[in-house]
Length: 474
Image (cartoon, rainbow, N blue to C red; front, side, top):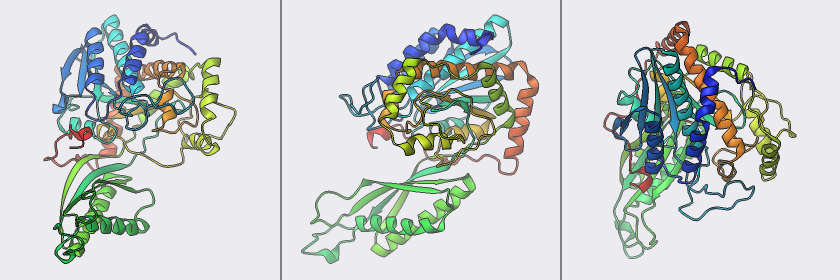
């Protein structure tokens, strides 16, 4: 690894603080919109490093922004710190050993995501001060990426209105520029109201809300044959109407998560799902009300920024893992299937090498991944401002996202080395944009060209507020 550039030395200088932050957040896993302690840890480190801190961004108690510098372009670096339910695990082991507690765990690596982004922003802050350069860097601590669409609410509230470009990353098995492909999605609750009655003595008087939910699910399942192959629909019961089978259920609620390649396709699919809900209510003589919980846009690419980020990766080189890291990664791979490992290579457009436990390359910029596509609220930021994302190698090749194996690796040497490495990539990309006005101009022109035909319209209805009690089941 070449580490000659000033910005990368500045990252190294503050790396211990970021690693400590990542480990502390790993130890306090909090679900979307409930990340009070995690946000407080990020806020405290921002203040310690001399950032000007704004709390409660967009009215969200667990969103924070730290700014440093004066004048010039504004570079945003995005972080996250929410965990997931059911993915608790002891650190540093290669077996499923959930820890005592509520069962939550950092099975998507967001403890690393926020820490590395804050580290990059801190290094850029110091670089601006040491070189007397006019520009501003901002760290955005963004909660609730896992289903809460917090960045969409922040965009809608104007938090990015004066930002010139945004940088983000995500933990991965390989290091490379993130291919800007994601699914737009929305979460909608369908609540059916019928009439309760005695299920044996007077069933004819009842109108079952649970029947309506089940008929809706059947209808949507039949629709799957007749929708785009890259669209996805999932559902979960929030309220099945009670536990007494001798009572006709008078109320029931199902949550639908609807995904499509872009916002235009999403809106069309949502309209069809709503019709099925209306039809289920008509068949059961119930009524239905809907409530949008969250929604996110698809990612937009930005060719100039992607090239600039890739150039930083090429200069820096691949992450430098050691023998202990590789040995632990092999232990983790022992808990995985051959399909898991093959899928990891395929997702990054690479040929399978089953003897390789950890990333030792930079994924080519033109590599095209195969496999399923998820969703992220970074999509809304990418519609608002030119945005680029990195993938940073922080775990064994083959580790599934949203798994106990990923949680187990969250405090490992692999995770720590990967965190620092990707922070250098983000910081280097940021100062390239500051030093080269032509790069920022090209990024803005690219963004304008991509949004000219379909200007950004936030998919969150104006009357929908951040669901800050989402994890409390409200």
